[in-house]
Length: 111
Image 1: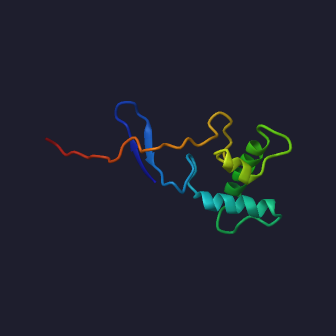
Image 2: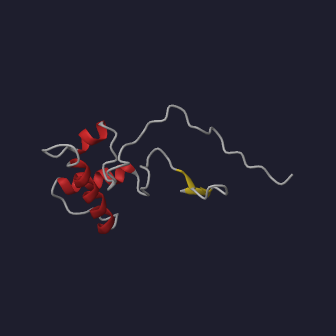
Image 3: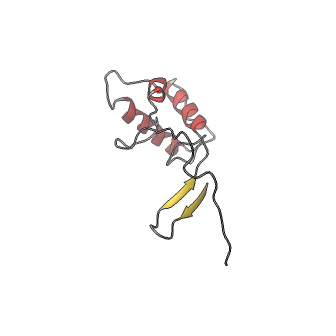
């Protein structure tokens, strides 16, 4: 992931592809495959570390029990634009942006 630090505010800005949720380095498809395998009674995937997959699974358990009983399925959470594997309860949904706020990044050289 390419990251830039703002010299004015000190914030780090990331150009994240649409295949990734914010704050996650693994693609959405890998996270969902891991969760589906674990919920299906299969062992953890061999391509990812067990600890990462356990973190995603714990996040799913938090999100599935957030609003309702019985727990929501992965498809229901995705339908509500919830980041399925996040541990956050305050910043848990994705907000679709109609147009990117900055169409291009312009880099200027010294004058």
